[in-house]
Image (cartoon, rainbow, N blue to C red; front, side):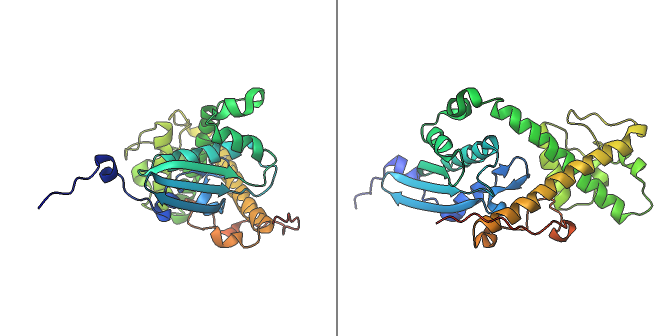
Length: 272
């Protein structure tokens, strides 16, 4: 019996599923809201076409308003294209941003792989890497606060002044601690149990007299992130009918929605 010869490239290639693509998109975060675009409902549509030459993926993204920051919009769209392109079997990726005032510019830049500066030219004030680091630091600050606030709520004998000596091993296991460890890793901070929790973005702890103010500032950052996320979720539901079904509440560290007493939304944009 003659053995069937299989092209090594074809043998190494496996079909990619929509579920795998969505899992890849789970790793793309809105930099300001610190939540995955999949949880926020920003993925409007996803199309997968598999042929003899591989798999073509087309993704359309949507945002809560037409005037969301172009920097953030480009970052999310570019990251989406990157994570999908990295999947085996994917040979072509098209990511487009819908209904944004810079949609044409961003989509053209993505299609040409022009990069951030090549897309925005003189309007590109900062590099994408600088933007990432700014929001990684904010995300780390919010993650610290969530963990320490959890600890204060669970042990009423603790005071805010005690939080400067809390170490990673003192935190209860759970989603918030896992999120903090990921945020520390993104900044290059150690994740060993003896590490102090309340530190700045360079890993330096605060002197005892500065701990209450550091915790207060961290709480302000976390409230701002959570409040903006809650507000943007509502804006998206208002802008796109039915988009609420695409939103998830599993995001890392997000406060329950009833913690945010925001005014009802009354502005609505209609799109065909």
